[in-house]
Amino acid sequence: MNLALPKRFPRPPAALAMALAIPRRRLHLAPPFLLDDGYMPRYQQLSSVDAAKKRSLAYAHLRNCNLCPRQCGVNRYEKTGMCLIGHNVKVSVIAPHFGEEPCIQGHHGSGSVFMSGCNLRCTFCQNHDISHQRNGMDLTPEELGQWYLKLQDVGHVHNINIVTPEHVVPQVALSILHAKELGLRVPVVYNTSSFDSMDSLRLMDGLVDIYLADFKVWETASSKRLLKADDYAATARESIKAMHEQVGDLCFTGDGIAKKGLLVRHLVMPGKESEGAQIMRFLAQDVSADCFVHIMEQYHPDAHVGKQNTRGKSKDVASSSTIRYADINRAVTHEEVSTVRQAAIDAGLWRFNDPPRHGGFAM
Ligand code: SF4
Image 1 (tube, helix red, strand yellow):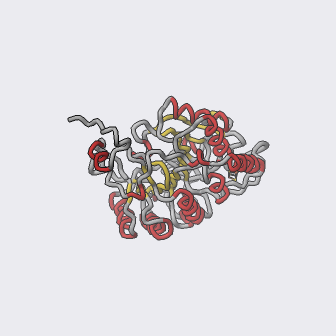
Image 2 (tube, rainbow, N blue to C red):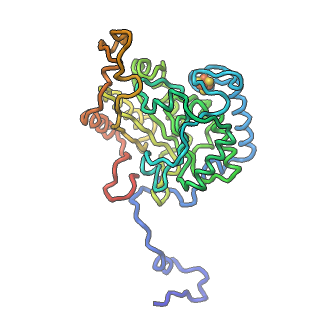
Image 3 (cartoon, protein in one colour):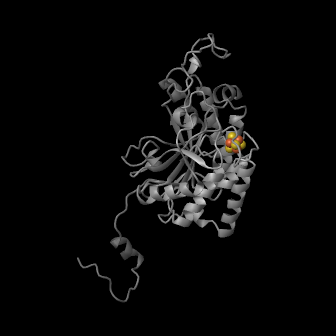
């Protein structure tokens, strides 16, 4: 069949164009969550005036750091605060990473930058060697930005995924602005515990495309005992609402890769399924019923959990064992995970990071 167009039709009429169109894969994705293939990262849309304002704000925060809820007020060019990180960043690993959600890692991996140090002190930390032990190499914000370009141009990753950035927000802001000038084009993922301040999130507004946010525990007692933070849940609630206001619900391009929006992770903890259920109700009612949620079941005892208490009987009021944090010294059960999942469904959530039944991506 000759498909050449008659000369009098410089553009094909709609019916003919449809007949000629190459068939596209059906994604079964509701239109509000499907982006145009030409999605441009938010930092690329930032004006030069706004970029300059963010740069000077980042330097000001480094000279008087109250940028996370710890509020140390230190000059990070001279000393360190609770996070133990100064004006440069310490990075543990930079590499394409295939341990993220399918819509984040895609086929080529997520360009992950694992920051050393953390502003929380989770007793069960699943990245203990990185977050608590400050191993890694020191990089200036400019050097960090150059690594983003290597991940993009050599690793062909789908995004730049900054893991545990809460305590290095000014340096991360400067690195993204530098990488923008060098030609970065892929979305930026802010992979956070959600123990962020409003000032941090204001600084990241316009620089981040995807917030990959943990919501760990709900009760103040759990926050104090397990995270060593007085106000984690209150901070996480406000942070996650602010993140959603900036980027909205998680959206994808037609290739199944997430490009913009909020993805909330909850690691189900042994015996804490009722806190998980509270978190699901909060997300549905106060953030969005269309919030994309990953209910994770891979908890394992780590860091301080299960270690022998060298001072004999534990001082931990919630545990009379000589084993530290004995109540969470086990994997989660199927019933605990199901309870959180059912609470999410009952609350109206429906976008989960489930293995897709049609062989594509979870969307
Ligand atoms: S980022 Fe570090 S220095 Fe700044 S307030 Fe938080 S813990 Fe303190």
